[in-house]
Length: 175
Picture (spheres, one colour):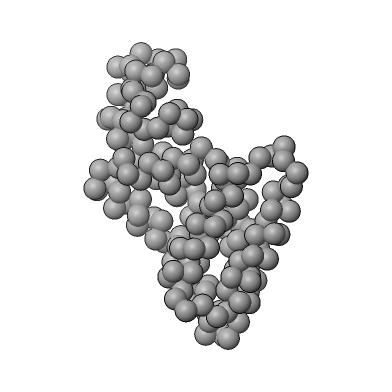
């Protein structure tokens, strides 16, 4: 994951991966059929971990509380996995069509949860968004963007960033 995040999928060879993990290049093929399979496995694991962690949470009743929980969860989960987040978003282009479709299905499950929260909020008169699908994509992009600039040794804690972002998300949906 670290090599793909630092150098990019195209620049990483199986020989380099083998060297980093301390095995002969041929030994890698006992664990993965090829580099594409390895990338897919890493991305699939990230998405399954995300979905499992999300499913394990106790969901509040109110759409507003659900949106806050989603916002804080997304930031906290992703800040703990910067390499996985980078690879999962930037290397989608490197997946073959079948693997891309499988990862997109997992991503859609996560996005659908947020869209359903937004739809319930609109129906309850709590949110005002013209298109819940576009709002979903905008919120996820905004939240995931934290990984591009956040530093653990920076002036704000992850919790403080979560609060600031929650306030921005709340205002973005006119809650």
